[in-house]
Image 1 (tube, rainbow, N blue to C red):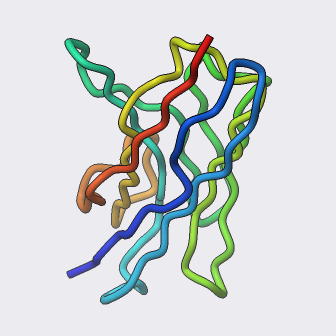
Image 2 (image 1 turned 135 degrees about the vertical axis):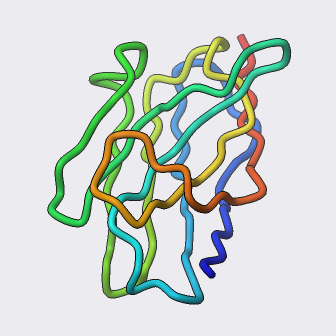
Length: 119
């Protein structure tokens, strides 16, 4: 099993920045892809970004150029840098990991961290 713990959420004004972190523990050697999803009230959970062990990244069109995903394999941690935040970025952000090299990781999930962007 793999445990994922997110941190770094909070309240920020529009145009501001945040950095989310997700630390993995447990059977980390089984992990290939890590990523971030988000879910706003009344909306479905959507993929924000993902990154494979080989460094291949995928981004939602709505965050391209504003968000950057990265990972530190030595620390078993994936990061999401959120810049130029907009009120519509407000959501609970979930970390996910997968044993496969895929675009949409979904084997393991964190509990989520709230990001709120005020206008």
